[in-house]
Image 1: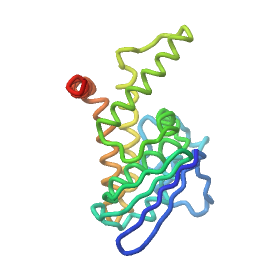
Image 2: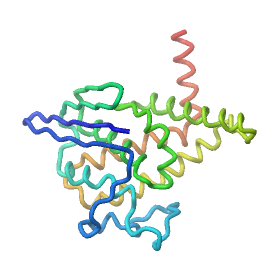
Image 3: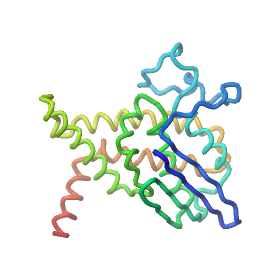
Length: 222
């Protein structure tokens, strides 16, 4: 994986973030307190204090939080996302761009819970809206069930496991929001995480209604 996010601001600034899929390993001596594993630890975190000192997801998003913590979430930015296959460009709000970048970085952070999203991260779709998030999430899950069935394992065609998965992800997103709440002077990171959280919630809280809405659209377009 080699994905680059370039942010161009209206004041002329240009900022790049590269995501390789390898968990970040910055110098421990420079880590702020909110990145420690026990600080606002996720209630469903499987990591023990003896296994890790710092939260993998917090370490991964730390550079983004520090770079944009005082920025206005609604300011317009030109964003170019480039991977090995193609480039995506969009003029959008900083909040939408950060939601996309933070989601990618969290999925590849090494967090054992967020790792469930890594297959989607490997085929990253920048700026995905809620419908696209649901379609991709359901599509990837069903593909996993197909592979399970082919391996003579129990397949979950009713998507019960997908709802449970996103409930686990909600707990992580809520804890991460609490971690950075105190350090963000602006609102860009907070709004990005809140919107990312709401998209994950749509799969667990109202999956059936989301599927009915998508079904109606697909039938209408047929």
